[in-house]
Image: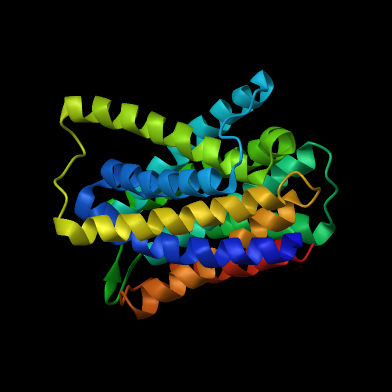
Length: 290
C-alpha cells in the first residue's frame, strides 16, 4: 500500500481511538487508562505474531537501542495525552496532539528530507494554531477553565514527544526490523515502562482513581486496539522516504476526533479556539499535500 493509503488508515484508527480514550481516562485515571489500552494492544499483537509464525524479538542490539529510545518517548507522549484528555476538552486537545505530524516533518527536514515552501508555511500554521487553541477564552456563554488550559499544555507536550518518537521509528527502528515487529517491540516496552511509572505514582498516591465499572475497561480496550492498529500502519509506512506524508496524514485524525467531540459530546469552543481548530486542520491537510 502507498504512504497516502497507510496514512489515511492511521487517521481513521487514531480518530476513534482518541475519542474513546477520553471516557477511559476520566473514569480510570490517565495512567491506568493508558496501561490498560497498551495491554490490549500488546495482547493482540502477540496473538498475531504467534499465529503468523514470526519472530518476537530482534537479534540486532542496535535495533534494541532504537526501540528503547522510541518506547521511552512513546510512553511519555502517551501519558501526557491521556492526562490532557482527563483535564481538557477533546475538541481542543485533539487538534494540538494532531500536530505531532508537523514535528515529525520538521525533524525529517532537518535530517535531509526536502520540503516545499507550502509545507514550510503549513508547519508555521500548525504552530500558530497550537497557540490559538491554548489561549484562555472568556466570551458570552463560554469561559476556559484552568483545568482545560492545563489539558492544552499537556497536549502540546504529547505532540512534541510523539512527533519525535515517530521520527525515531522511521529513521532508526523500522528499517532494521520491519513495521510489525517494530510495533510489537514498541508496545511491549511501552507497557513495561508505563507499569513502572504507574507503580511509582501509586506509591505517591496521586493522580489515581478507581476504575468506574467494566465500561471504563471497555473504552480503554477498544482505544488500545485501535491505537495499536494506527501505530502499526504508520510503522509500515515509515522508513520508505515518505515519513512526513504518513505521519501528517495520520494526524488528520484530529478532524474526525474534533467532529465527534463537537457533535456527540456537545463540547463548546470560543471564537479564537474555533479559529485555531480550523487552522490546525487546514495546515495539517496542506502538509500532507506537499
